[in-house]
Length: 261
Image (cartoon, rainbow, N blue to C red; front, side, top):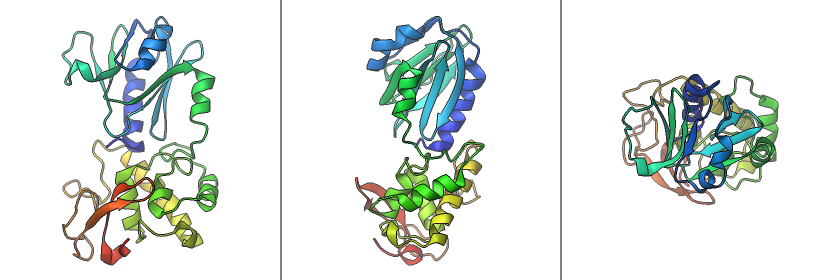
């Protein structure tokens, strides 16, 4: 499932292959390509960055492509003429340069606009948890000001901190012993600081790993996520899962370590 760590890695891959290259064609099934893709042909890829779960490709002349993979998307880069590993029909955005073919598969959210328009679209995002420079005080201020109904909603709110998705949400709540359905207004100052610290730690560690791990053991990568009815790695109680938050999202927790929503 794409989250801030995997978007960081995708951005670094595209950065390595595309920056400085001239765009020779733009294709794909997303409506943004039909509307504005031709505007990118002939431009140079200036830089690539990730902002939370958004990947931004900046072009000469102040144009930007923004992609959000949601739960289904992925990026692959091929050499011209190389066989693709996924079906061509799933290609939503295809950027071709003389040396590379970058394909965004199955992404539901793609936009191509002048850079200021794209910047306005993502201006609400909180501090990026995978950024080299992370404003801890700003993140903490946003946690304290949040009106989220549950701890799960707080962790997923990209306007608070950008990059946490469903996997990290469940794992962070477990590691901190927080009830995922708990009321954020009841969190202590120490709880709020721990949320920021743990989210930052996990995203930074995982941005460099080829496969996401929260336990430190690649053979058993998660404490609770995806482990419904299996034994808790701390107390051996059975992990539970259910829909938590608004809108409801599948969440995993230990009823002994965290309480029952």
